[in-house]
Length: 263
Image (spheres, rainbow, N blue to C red):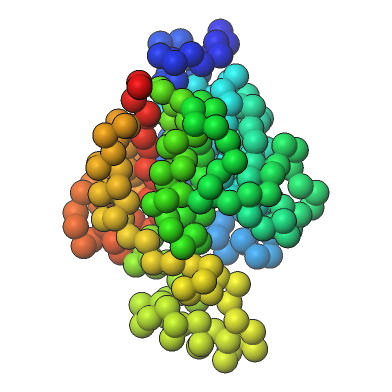
């Protein structure tokens, strides 16, 4: 049985609908994903394709993808956009940096250059707005989140994932020295490597917290707050997000899922 195209009241899975692939947040899956981080720079295709397949399967547990219109905010080289299209979505990717679109080969189809802080789409244009690991790279993260919610139609889904600052990978390539301060970590990196980090604190990397994300999601009166889960953790570790303080260090990467209310 195949899934019908989404309608305003059918953006969450209904009986008989199938996700793109079953998503099982097991300990083995967590180990596989975290181990793959070692290959991000030596074998980026392997790393990003694995991450994209896993994340799209995770998204598929919250919404029906076949036939859905999807925007991938901060699409980069298009690994997630291609996985979304393979899952049946009609996907458009957007990124502010043209160089990122071709960093790992030809740009993905249907990609645009534009800002996540002012998405060039009408209000209510998409069924799903998706973003992976972009929020911490924009200077106004909650303006970006507002824009993502704006462009989905009533009943539409926002799937927003980011690396929180106090996680072990919060400083990206400067980790774990970011715990001593973002500026200090960046200076240390430049001394050791002879060049500044790609993700420069205060310019292209900003400290975003789990608590701030939860306040934003819970404070929306135009959307249902569906889920907040640690992206790479097994399902039984979801309690981490509910513990103040601990969640900032132990979450690693947070997924927020919201569903836009009817007007």
